Amino acid sequence: MKNYGSLADNILKKISFSPDIAVVMGSGLANISSYLEGPKSISYESLPGYPQTTIHGHSGKFIFGKIGHIKVLLAIGRFHYYEGYSLEEVTAPINLFSKLKIKDLIITNSAGSMNEDFPPGSFLISNGHMDCTFLKNSNEPQVVSDAKYHNPKLIKIAMSCSKKLKLKTNFGIYCWTMGPAYETPAEIKNMQQLGGDAVGMSTVPEIIEAGDRGMRVLTMSCLTNFAAGISQTKLTHEEVVSNAKKFDNDFSKLLERIIKNIYKN
Image 1 (cartoon, rainbow, N blue to C red):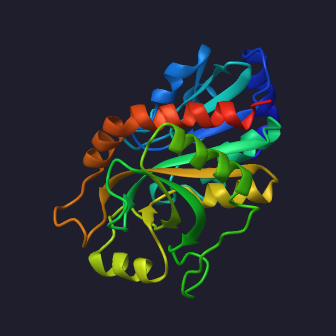
Image 2: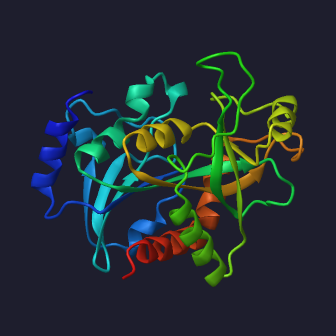
């Protein structure tokens, strides 16, 4: 799927505005759509050549609407490398957002906590990320915290909004692993030693693509569980989605407050 310009033109014909901001939603997270005025939905299936979601908790649609005067695009459902997609296909939404001339992007995910001080039900604002897939090389993963990929202004706004809502939110480092199998206790311990706080199977390719395209990027995790070695119970994707839905109301309140404050005059 390379003709993102044509796809963007087709979408703009179906909606009455050009979005200001896009939000990529993680597993089980979608309640923010209830805050949109005049929502209009476009399924991924209706877009020729566009990838399709295959994972439970990712319904596969765009929802366009407004929060106050702010024009918002929600991507409900993302693509993972472990599904067999190429990295270009994984980042298809980002390429489309670029053609739609979107400048601000919030990337969300449901993640496992590797920090015992960050319990399930709390949220994490990423101030750095690590690629722990070893796709590009076998070198030890390094924390990437460049402002290009983690916008300081958006990070500050997000934490301020969380404090006003009295939500438990921390700064931290998000680690990307290949999946689909969950990490072993030994892998978790290694990522902890390297500085990781949360772990998941997505997000980092999107961060890199968006940053390289000049978007202002904010990444937020809904922490749904403790990672292996901290939790003694076997984790399943169904549990992740179920827990994400439990915490989605507060997460969506926070997202709405952040979006409003990004464009506050």
